[in-house]
Length: 209
Ligand SMILES: [Zn+2]
Ligand SMILES: [Zn+2]
Image 1 (tube, rainbow, N blue to C red):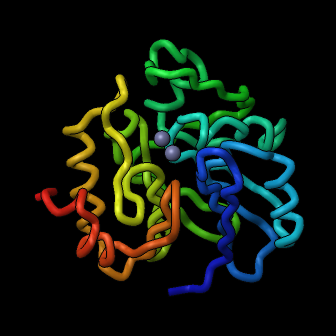
Image 2: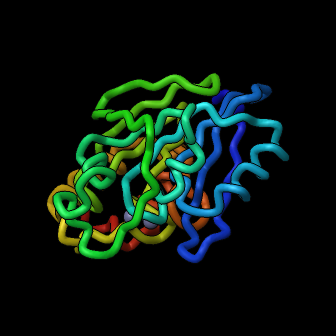
């Protein structure tokens, strides 16, 4: 596996991970799920010697997406699945079941299952993994899965919101389990893990057939 630049920022009340990724030795970064503290995130990138080139959202919950529009400003595109792009335009139609304030995004772009994006020297595959929200996606680059709120170390995301689907969640978890054991998992909350570790020890995956 190729070396990759990887950093994470999680100092926020939800403990949500904002992942920063890019090619090793490059100067650009892709941000995944910036929910809070845009100034702190800019400071992290400055310290790392990276400029943001694009923002990806695994889904549109506020803790993952709230400040995407602030960081993107006039220049950066923000990518989200079309089913969660609704959250930026019509929160009632998206129906999260709680207050979900999002800063407006100027250049909101829709992605779909199977799309391949290329930013900061890395290519990123989009996998639609609904259940937690209708437009939840995982992003795959090399042998790394950015799993959002699908799978965490030892747990899984909720699927009991008004716009959740427990059935879709099961199918998405089956996709997760189809990955190689060695794949690294960068979850939306908590520490890094691997597919193999979750397959063998995550109690919420035992009954996924
Ligand atoms: Zn969420
Ligand atoms: Zn979350």
